[in-house]
Amino acid sequence: MNRAHKNSLWLIALTVLFALWGFFAVQEAVHEQATTISQLEALTATHSAPAVQAALQQSKFVLNGVRQNYLGWFFAIFILLIAMIALVDFVSRNLQRPMRLRQVLAGYSFVAPAGVQLLLFSLGPILFALFISFHSWSILAQEKPFVGLDNYAEVLGSGDFWNSLKNTALYTLHVPVGMAVSLGLALLLNRAKLPGLGILRTIFYLPSITSFVAIAIVWQWIYNPDFGLMNYALSWLGLGPYEWLHNPGTALLSLMLMAIWVQAGYQMVIFLAGLQNIPAYLYEAALIDGASTWQRFRYVTLPMLKPTTFFVLVTSVIGSFQVFTQIYVMTEGGPLQATEVIVYHIYKNAWDYLRMGFASAMSFVLFVIIMFLTLLQFRMMGQRSDWQ
Image (tube, rainbow, N blue to C red; front, side):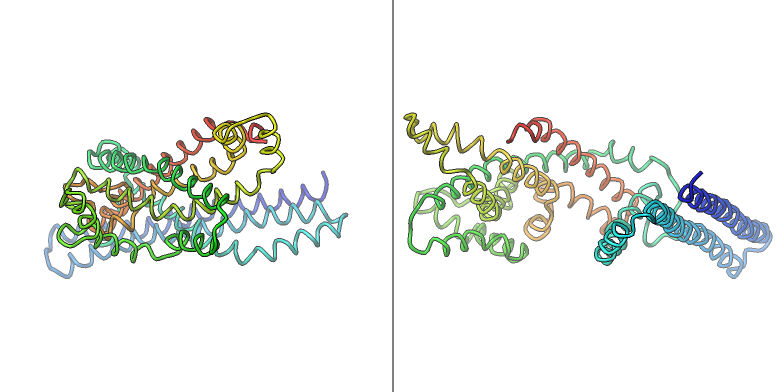
């Protein structure tokens, strides 16, 4: 057995001993607090003094805190030990190659600050959300009991959840329309020889870097049934006025139109980069063969844009399933829950109803749905080798 394996085995043994110690420490602390609760409950049966009742409630609260604190510290130190095992194992294996060891350690030292940030502010909250999704967790309640998969079962049996999922799916239908508009703009700006072309590209891109709250407020004014710009423009055609955001039949459509406008600039820039990477000799060969404009677009442009189209499609679908700001500012899920998408539904359960465990369970169900849709798009668009 070499030195690397011996070091790894020592650290693994240390981790196992730590895990055993943590388990028995938690059990001992919980047992002590549970004994105190039993004594207070027995005293409460004969004495109903407010002080005894308060002491009993305080002990129950402390018991719950003991479990959570021990589990939190245990998990943090356990992860640290696992990282130490990996580090020691790597160093032991590469002691004979000092140059490679220095290069790798230097690289990891550069990414360490970002890694710590991701661990604390991304991975940590995700793991905590997973933890509370198995509990009946309320900010105001002292007791947060473990409920297993009950939250997930309630999510799948909730009519409001399925309604919000339906609204989200309908909202996502704007993605292919928006991609077509963005591709058209990219083709126009890629071929047109107009003065101030850079300024036009900047103007189209501006909505992508503007605050979504500001954009939502402006579009709320545009859709105003009394003095909004949309109804004013339609009045010249003898149409309207329409209750854009106050009618269940048009509210979601109005948000979809705004989303197309917001995303057009960003998607246009991505498509424009893809168009400019298409070799010119392909178009020249197509012209020599007598291909028309449509044939060049169909048999040259579209196939060569397949990687770009796939990237825009995947990111746009994921973004549409995570839409929140526009809903929160413009409609608050109304009218009659016609625009209550799934992320807004999660927000309501978490911060209006204070059901953090239930909302966390919905978040992970949403994660599974997005992951499934992404994998499905990968399968439908073909393997990477098909793009080249």
